[in-house]
Image (cartoon, rainbow, N blue to C red):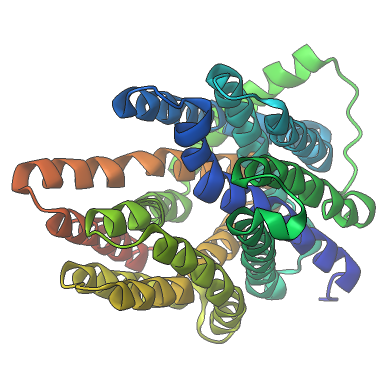
Length: 414
């Protein structure tokens, strides 16, 4: 089969370079810190944590509920690209709007963050679904890895620049670090918008000629979602993969979200943790590309299982971590497999599903990813309270990786 247009593939992958700036600079980096130290300054820590958690939780829940229906609607009228552009604009405008939120106006900050998160996560449904439109079957692993690799690199480049600006605002003619952080939100919005242009101009989606009102499309989308749900249940391989994915990707997400908190609980310098996060981004770039080649050579399933095995070792290793150099090693090794597990999961799933229903099937995929953000942190919290040990709490995440890996072994890929 003829390979897809190279410009189209790179234009699709460039969107990962674009929107990953939001994931690194805003979600993982500055927003949680700025929310606590600037917008809600003076509020009790437990209360500010509650509202930040509510914003994160509400954003994730909205996308998880909407994802399969939005995907079905996109398939009904061939609107994956149009919906991607809509949610990109939502994310860009809401992120840029954070610049104008003054100190104390935390409600506005929380709402903007919530809506920007919806734009980011919902956009990824259609970005993922377009993978089947810009790839032939033989190139799914390679192209998926290219997207993740560029995402880690692009997100890391802008995050590094924003960290430098925040640490040394005078170098850039800024009054203080608060202004630097506010400008970083604008930089993310501009970066996201600018590097989305190749996708807008050069990625083509097959046309579906359907004339119907929005209400009819939504009704048809809901009906198709219900049909697809029963369809997914009947597709044993797809269903088994989704359960496996839900388990092990929860472990990946838990390690990513809780690593800095774990480092702080061990008394490590916050600057060290930020530098480790940056290091992870740049290591994940080439490793995601390498895992794409592993998937082509040995199969995506084998590559994912290798990554899961490394994560199990990391969880055990973290129990015995003593100093900041150990944390650097932990972050570095995590970066080696994080992008690979994510990219090969996406390409393997793309192989298992009907191509004509990619939108709604990737809606399910993203829904599982959103609900996966619940089990791991809850497991760590329970173990931490029961044992009084953060180290054993991290070790408990092995359960998710082991269960997901065993379930994945049962998935037939040929």
